[in-house]
Image (cartoon, rainbow, N blue to C red; front, side, top):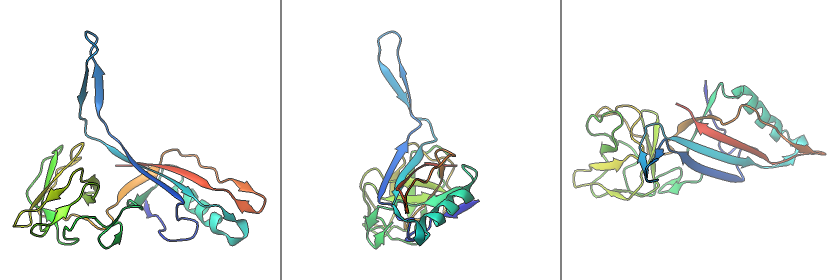
Length: 209
């Protein structure tokens, strides 16, 4: 099962949030001269870390958090997350660029492991800014550099690490709160308490696919 994180619910709003990546790049050092060669290997995973707030036990907020975590049963089930601290045109979870927020699709068939993704329906002269996020076929992609759509509204997004699966023409592209599927990085979790109060709770997540 895949659950949605209870956005905006007391106890589930992080007081600290981290977003990062674990690329699958392989680095090999030459035994002859010590030179290092790197190879891109598909399979980059996004990482999340968050700290949930402390609070009074009697308000029942931490109990709800613990119930949610228990429902995940360690790493059996997953949670959909978007970048909770990305703010753009339209609010939290929106791109910073002027790209159309709906109606964007993949322009042409793009092979698995492709390092670029052609989009259409972006709006003539519109942009994706560095750090903007989108998803296609369940893969969360970050635009690494500013990209500009041409007069026909076509735009090409570089894909660091490559596409995990082929993207077919007309496949829909999500630009508003695009999500990826995450699981707890460790099956174990502990919710600490002081007398009458729940302490802050730190959780680490890793992308699952």
